[in-house]
Amino acid sequence: MTSVLALTGGVGGAKLALGLARVLPPGELTCVVNTGDDFRHLGLDISPDIDTLLYTLAGLADPVHGWGRRDDTATFMQALTALGGATWFHLGDADLAMHVERTHRLAAGHSLVAISDDMRRRLGIAQRVVPMCNEAVRTRVRTAEGWLAFQDYFVRRRCEPAVRELEYLGADAATPVRELQTLATQPGLRAVVICPSNPFLSIGPVLALRGVREALARCTAPVIAVSPIVAGGAVKGPTAKLMGELGFEVGHAAVAAHYAGLVDALLVDDDSGCAPGQAPWITAPTLMQTLEDRERLARCVLDIADRLAAAPRP
Ligand code: FO1
Image (tube, rainbow, N blue to C red):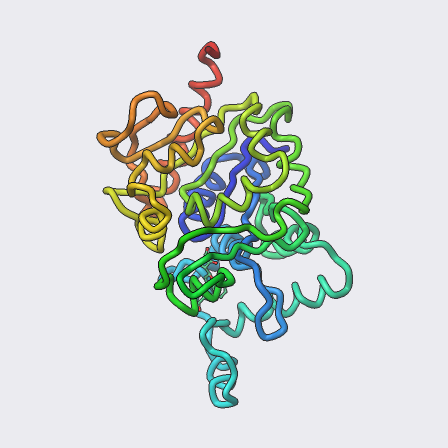
């Protein structure tokens, strides 16, 4: 039974999801994962955020990149290079098995939700890993060069082009998974945690699905977001650069504005720049370098949720 629902995407989100998985009893965590980064490459259906989470929870993630598998080899990429194939997106040999098997099962008519659930069981993961929807939702970014598909922007172009606009293609027509549809009224739900993922690239697609913002706003369980901004910038990745390009001042206030009306508390590492009147700020160390940091932050989030649940609602 789910007692905590985490919304996540990318490496930062997976770190807190791992902390939550380690401090909660097995089976009490359900992670709903961004699929806006998914794409078709070399004929394969690739779901980077699902795989990052699966590998992280299974203890298989590459500790240097955070994505891909630890100790993976590159025979496939070397052979592909020799044949003149597209090498801008690295697919390790063991990781390749995931993409081949997912592609095969999708073509055979299995849903992304069913495939992800089977994969997590086979990897020995007790927590549920649920894609945000079964349909294709594709994040794309508008730059001076026109619209770019997400991985073209993120990996091929290394986030270099300045982003003017974001779009989550297909979000309007997609049906959010049951876990999102029912989160407003799910009995026994202890907390909804918005992980410190990129609010625009990783959480944005989830929030763009029909009814999700409304369900979060009506949720009877405490909704806690953790800001991905640490020491005034992003830990890794394009969050700070993107925020600036989209016209926001880089800081927790822009994160709070993005989640306005949806969260009961925003966890920040430093509330000195936070505007009064926005979501209640709670200060805690949010940098997750070690496994202990992940567990400590997870306990802190759950503690805040429990305190909010016990307090009379305004
Ligand atoms: N990110 C990169 O920066 N370069 C890569 O070559 C790359 C390959 C890759 C392969 C499998 C996978 O699951 C993820 C991979 N990522 C790579 C990460 C990924 O594209 C992004 O981190 C996410 O989409 C953003 O959350």
